[in-house]
Amino acid sequence: MSHLKRILVTGGAGFLGSHLCERLVEQGHDVICLDNFFTSQKSNVMHLLNLPNFELIRHDITQPIFLEVDEIYNMACPAAPGHYQYNPIKTMKTSVLGAVNTLGLAKRCRAKILQASTSEVYGDPEVHPQPETYKGAVNTLGTRACYDEGKRAAETLFMDYYRMNSVNIRIVRIFNTYGPRMHPFDGRVVSNFIRQALDGDDLTIFGDGSQTRSFCYRDDLIEGILRMMNGPDTLIGPVNLGNPNEFTILELAKIILELTQSSSKLVYSPLPADDPTQRQPDIRLAQKHLAWEPRILLREGLQKTIDWFRSIRLNEYRPPTPNY
Ligand code: NAD
Ligand code: UDP
Image (cartoon, rainbow, N blue to C red; front, side, top):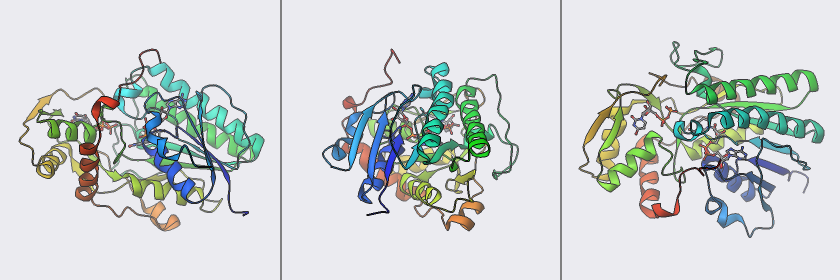
């Protein structure tokens, strides 16, 4: 059938990538999942391995790869602060060389290519909520810069391949997304709080907990990514994808304590450097051009995530490999 495509998902074994692979496999496409398993494991895609339209390649996207594909979703990059700061030089290489290699592949194959960019390109934003036109306030020298600047450089490469080589690109800027299959030890706030609440450990609030984030459930996010890839070629982005419902970190902690019926206490420690004080997506572009908006409320999404955390065995997850 002509609408079926050969699709490469880099970072396809990760939290978002594995769900994207699932959706694409369900649609009947031939899916190639590429991953070096830095922040993920084979178990995330185990259920897909026996399917005739799914293939798994262990490969590091900082190295070129020769494939024949129609579409590329470039998701490969550690996303949690603890993961991307583990080896910051490698993080920058993954974003920049990963973009060069996937864009080169897209150019050769005439494939359409989508970049998973991030709200971190806005840094610690002075404009609230953040529209796509806001140019951002990133500290180029800080410990988050390896990720923020890597993703900004990747956006630049996408735009230059579009202008110079007519590569058919898409850029989405993803805001904090959570859900089942997020790495339980990634250090992100949702995974930390749920794990701590279920174990009866103290919930670790950084700063006074007044900083805000807007949390999007993974199914909503993946739907937005698919709509963007399949949207009009004139809509190259960047387009924000996220849930505009904004919460303080303290509010999040209290909701998780309530949903888990945990009697864990809150403990406070200093706010990490350059930690954004506020973050909320302006999603009017996605609403207007993709007819997309999130549907899952925070409590509903958290409940599904808590149920998943209860169902897994934590000793089957390991932190990033030390020789990465
Ligand atoms: P994740 O860490 O679960 O997934 C990233 C995947 O990329 C992992 O499977 C990892 O092993 C793989 N990877 C890392 N470096 C690689 C390399 N050099 N070569 C090949 N594979 C490599 O994180 P996620 O939350 O699923 O994020 C997926 C993408 O979405 C990332 O690009 C991230 O920057 C972006 N994003 C995510 C969020 C979020 O809230 N989850 C927010 C903004 C942007
Ligand atoms: N945070 C926290 N306790 C934790 C982990 C994170 O208070 O155990 C805070 C963190 O300082 C930040 C917010 O929660 O203000 C979101 O952090 P996360 O690492 O999930 O994502 P990001 O900072 O990249 O948005």
